[in-house]
Image 1 (cartoon, rainbow, N blue to C red):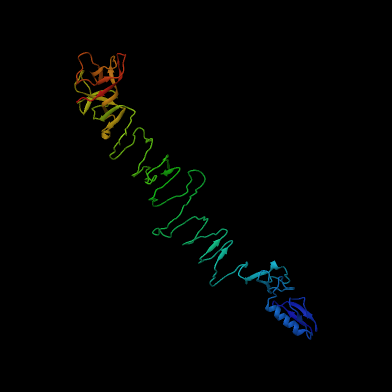
Image 2 (tube, helix red, strand yellow):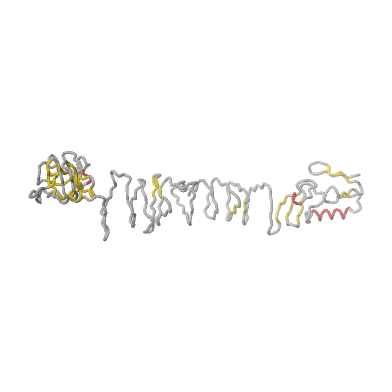
Length: 402
């Protein structure tokens, strides 16, 4: 009576006639009833099964799920489908030697996975991974992570945090920040707190404050620019040395303000465009530049009233090289009065260079005639000629009268 062999899935594999052996349906020899070499065939099957058909090539006539030990790579493989004889098509299960590559499909480990080194060629997805050495050769997409130590060569991330505002972190080494395209693109933005750089901040291009550029070009000394800028675009503190070639303000009409006590060192000096020293005095009326004034009137000064007045005090200036009492008022309420230096003076009549100027009344001066000039009524001396008879101006050197 012939044997009918049924596979695990219920399908019929083959039928073996009496007194024969089947060597074509599987990798084993399947003896039929009363086969004369039954014992030898059975023993051979046991040996082949024990060594998992160890050979350099897959066994003949394999069945799905059959094991084969690949002696070329020292790996245990599984047949993926009946009759698969191509070695590369078999599924590699394990690496039995100390080196080589083990390839799996999708593997789920419900317990602990322990390895000396883990290399993720593509993606590594897990709720929690604890590893001493992790090598990522491609791209890792990490939504949230805490990296306490290690080297990351290239990191593209939207957020780096220490976990809490009270928890501080440290960046050690030399870092290069590259923003977007263009010279003014943002590379590093601080939205809260301050940047504290005790050893200094160095830039080869621009500082920006409130969106406006600040370019301290030139060579820096005293450990470079180690002070800090306030939000109002001003230097709040500078204890080092600064040697600019020009200090200016965009507010030409109002100028700027210097606070504190300043001293010119040996050999230093201040150069001015204009040449008179002036002080603000309260006046009883607005006066034009060049008006000759005296002490008196309803306020501190008024336009000189009398001819050859010995009450003459000075000349109104709008070109003071140095203005004292500058905060007392404006040009209408407190005109600047030149108390010494070169200034244009309102005069009437002809004037010769070198003439002594005296009061002509009504806020105007004239040249003194012989015997008129005294130490009390002379306003100053003309530095240029005036050839007309009417009222005009002439440049003169003036001094205040006590």
